[in-house]
Image 1: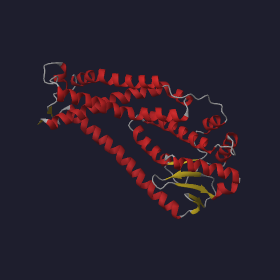
Image 2: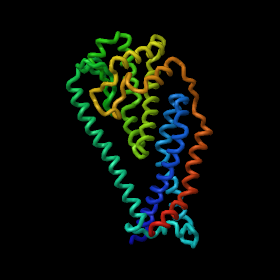
Image 3: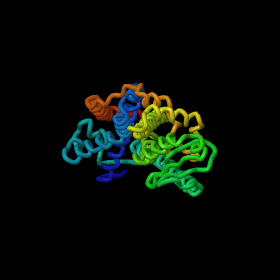
Image 4: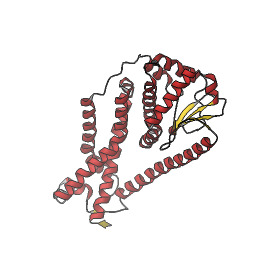
Length: 320
């Protein structure tokens, strides 16, 4: 049995885990109901909403923990004979209770996710180093890979590199190559490989089907932003769309680096929506700040109103 300040902190961690699970479940329901509406948002707004959704469980758990810690520190509410006094016995903690089991499970699962992602990063860096050694530099930050397949992609977190295969160079015109390399340079400038990897870490805490759905949406937003970055006075959106379709037809799904979570590539992902976007067929709207604020408040309210009920529900089955 642990008592005192250490027990308080361990109980706060338990509260954070419960709040995270509740918020995660709430966000999952919201995403399942509103996922198709994301496509109608402007690219920048969509990125903000997606990042907000995957980080909300973490932000919510921190807010809930701070409220309980503040209540314990600056008032006697936890020391009285109210339901909150029984709620967590803040100054007493036992590893042999469900509180202890909750922390252990959370640490093991989080450690597994983080370890898996770090191993993925290590293997990616190894593959990237090998690929760079076999590549020929074309211009600053751009490398040619001697392969007959047609592909172009960007990889790397700090030292970002754009790659294009010799097969694509031979089968595309100079103007099309300019579009492709401009697209890849846009990915590098926006740090999309790093953002895609970090987004993958946050989504790993959702159920696999929902995680895949969220990653597909962020991939679409990143690709649309990179496509749009190429459009200028000399390069029309129609030409970018035609280049995209041609690249996809030339086997653009091939990539020398196998892990798609750590690369962003041209012509391989969410092709249909990207073409519609470039052709102006999508009526995109900015984010509704009021709706977003209500969404955040709703999730916080759900956590604060249900965490006590979840606690007592667990204790009807398990010993405290």
